[in-house]
Image (tube, rainbow, N blue to C red; front, side):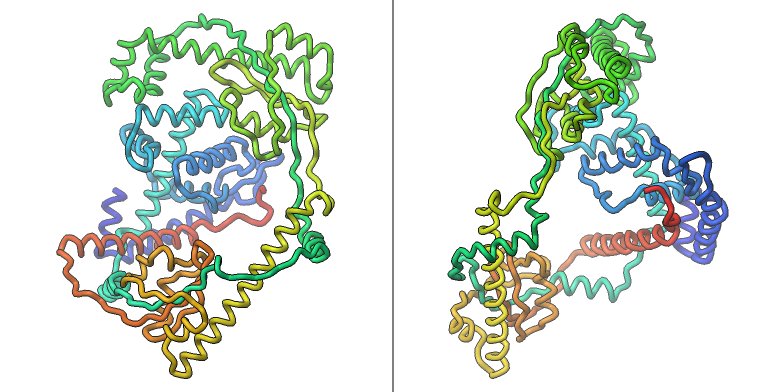
Amino acid sequence: MITWLQNATGKHHRLIFGFLLVIIVVSFVFYGFAGRGALKGSGSYMYLGVDLNDPAIRLRHRDAQFFANMTGQRMDNVSLQQRVAELSLANSLNIPEPSEAEIRKIAKDATMPPDGKAEGDTLGKFIDFASKQLNASDLETRARFESFIKDTWRINKAMTILSGGGHATAAQVKRILDRERAKWTVDAATLPAANFKATIADDEAKAKTSFEANKETYRLPAKVEVSAVTITDVAADTSPISDDDVVTFGYNVAEKFKFETGKVKEQALARRGEIEKLIRAERAVTNLAGLISDELSEKFAVDAIKADNQGFAAWLKAKKATLTALPAYDAGSPPVNDKVPAEALRAGGDLTEKEWRTDVYRTEQGAVFVLLNKRAESRLPEFAEVKALALSNWKATERSRLLTEEVGRLNKALLADQAAGKSFTESAKALGLTVSSPAAFTAFTVPENLTGVTENTGQLIEVAGVGKITAPIRTRNGDYVFLRPAKSEVPKDDSTAEETKLFVQRISGRNAYFTSMGLIQDLTAPPEPEAAK
């Protein structure tokens, strides 16, 4: 029905489409926003019918950010409120969930290496790594990843429905084609950063002044020394395993076991023996981690017991725990350790004298938690402690300032010479610049040695136009280059009908994307300022 409505409105009934948007807005105002600011209970904050302070909602959003980063997607600027609003919009449009086959395909594609060359069970490896980062079981991690896939798929579908297929006018297509195909012939004059000589003597007084003005940048991070406590006294699991358990776990290892789509149930039951071993191993470790966590909470609560408690030491001995002292590390920058989850080490960086141990984490070997041995708090150093670094930074800043001044002087000289009718190349040579004539290129295929770090070289060339000199461009290797476009030619269009069709589709798709983003922002207004942080 949605597809039919989209086609109808996209072709002939734009008035109906506009009416649909009005209905959506009204539903947001009178249905979703009716709960805005309303308190469902102590500490609740309702937005579009969702409690933004609900731990489960916040966890789901953190999962979305985690899995988006893990799969190379962008969610940096998507807040919790925005995610909830987008899902509410998908609900308003009655967007269904993707099918099981679609979810599996999306999951497999999302975990494929960038080069497309899969080595073994990439999805299984992804889930295994993610489960350790999240400190969750394999089954729970798969469920959370599936929720992320469903939510993202539904949001994307909603955006597609709102924007339609997009439309590109003939004038827009021609303008973009001309820009993409136009070949620029330029003269280049480069000031190599390595050739810029500036004599800067050590000046401790100025370096100290700079240090005092930027003292916060020299702050030393908190540093911790911790021990990893590993308990491997795993009790064998003897609980019943049903056919449903085998089949459910079979779906989790379908990639690893290369089960055929649509035949997972039968094939999982056929390999029941192997799957039962995996289930029992996971249950055993999960049970151990749970028991250790419960015992620690009951007997050695951090707010009631100190780290040097004799009873705690005796308990560790009774559990045959292995304590491994780890090298000191900066809080917030945990090291990589094959036997200790990154999440545990991250939590270890937050330990203090009062909060002297972390929660318990599950590994393949057993249960692991981290103890604090020593903590040095973050502090601002004295100048003498970082004198060498401060001097080096000051000299680098001074050199950069002098280089900028030199670039400005050269720019003025080139413009003055051009105004006086002098040749660009001759003027550049006289100023000691390196002159070159690179092969013609388009605004979108700028050579690497001419590509700006903060400036868009193609745009600067287009703005300057033929015969004019661009503003100085700082390239990736630190050099500065001045360009004078000498000629711009648009080759004859020899595109095939199919290539033209694909190009129009690309531009239409881009227009549709920006349309959908605009509509999403208009239809999903943020909550009031008092919303949960």
